[in-house]
Length: 238
Image (cartoon, rainbow, N blue to C red; front, side, top):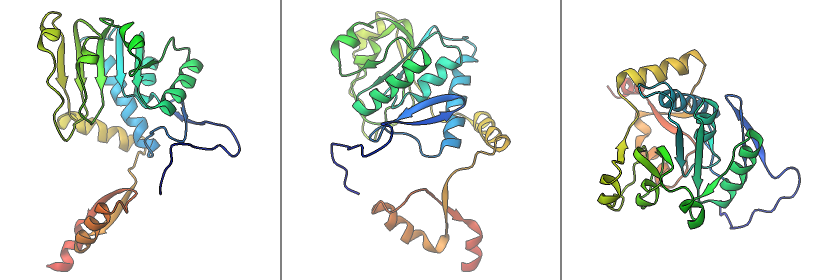
């Protein structure tokens, strides 16, 4: 459906509260949020566990870049990271995250397009989690890292990021790292967690014979859930 720049509230509250793992996230009409809440709970919990139970111990601080309503950031804070920051550019998401932050006792929310707010936190953080899947300037965020700080990229843009400023990295021994979904042990850990907690994906099952139709629907954005092929349908063509 066409979407305009303005959302008009006709009745009720301006925000909807979604509670995940005990954390109440405030949602607004134009703020992005994962629709499968069960899977999202597992993702948030796993990210918090990986960051706080690693060999390096709990980091002193962490950033969640383009954090949306703050799901990862607030879960890191709940897991014991002493100082967590979320950066976002979408006004609706910022407003929602600020409401949640106030309820949870957070000190501040930083808008990444605000140069003054960004400048106030130069050389402040040990770790930054960058989930952005679009090309952007990495220097704006690596300058926020302390000496020996790391920014880990988990978003995969279709075209490369602009090349980062090398001196910005080497003079303070900053690092840019990357991570995918993990290897077989981590994938199995996630599957076991989902099985134990009844976390199931929202999918649409299709027959192998309907693959062309499914592709056309995908091209036309006529889908709500991930397509999964029923492999038993192969027997019908054998």
